[in-house]
Image 1: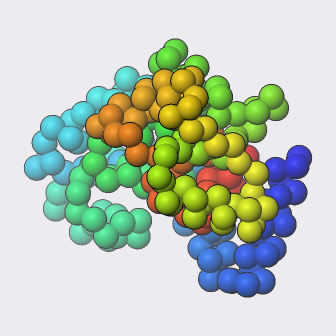
Image 2: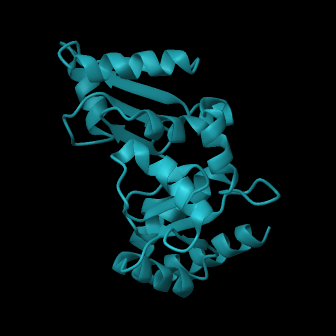
Length: 219
């Protein structure tokens, strides 16, 4: 309940001082069922090759049946794709408001969570993501930080300004957080860069708009 109150207060603040950002956050022009629940779209092409094949096989393994839009000789399909992304990198997965170009199993699972819940995760991943939720199963805003992370500092200032609650784990002085970070980062080349999450969703850009969108989607 406290987080919902924080979200409402932040939204009102942003609407007053920056209406354009507010509209961007709350608009629902992604892939949704008539009931408002997220659905999955997958844009492919037969020339895409291995990445498209891997995406299709992964979705099948998770018992996900997306709406598949084959772009070959399909101008309407290309037009539909342009509503979501300008990139020509395929495949493109759309789940609710989430858009991912290319294929990465962890990123797909983090988005598919909105459709299938934690059944998409391995037991190890479930143990990691469990730390990203509170006792009421509400998503936490989580920063895995490291020494000298200037964007972490900027993000903390933004969160404080907007009154957003968050938890920060420094991977240099918290061994458990370092282990979780290593598991999460493995899918992205094992980088030691800081990570930002809302629940199961990784926020690639360290900025407030993406965090608010994730909170709105996942709560």
